[in-house]
Length: 143
Image (cartoon, rainbow, N blue to C red):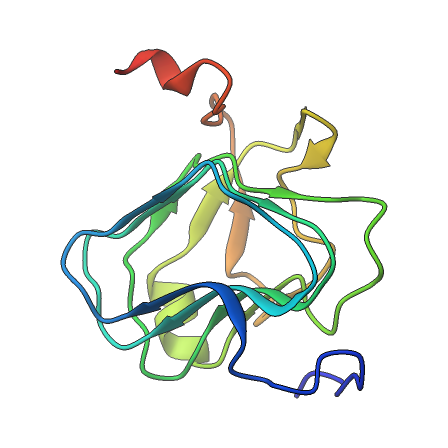
């Protein structure tokens, strides 16, 4: 269980919150000073979470026990190495779903952020692998 911080008294506060949904694209956002950077509640298959930059949060990336967003492959989400240490850099409340829907990434620094969260729960949710990460500055070669 994450350590409870007093600097963010409203645990449900989020810069971006997705409650269920169909194929949401959450891309190239920069977030700072909210309890949750991105908070997911409920099932939202085919979610694309890419190129987001987390700074100071209690839980920068947080999926509650009901959330399912599918695996994320080389999405290039970034954690600020100079941010105040969060309770968890990435927290998925459902360990089974986390291991069934991993985040694959190549360790890299893009625009001052690292693609590896400073901490994660459960262990093994984020899996390093080879390949190019998504980068918002070139939009991955897409429109």
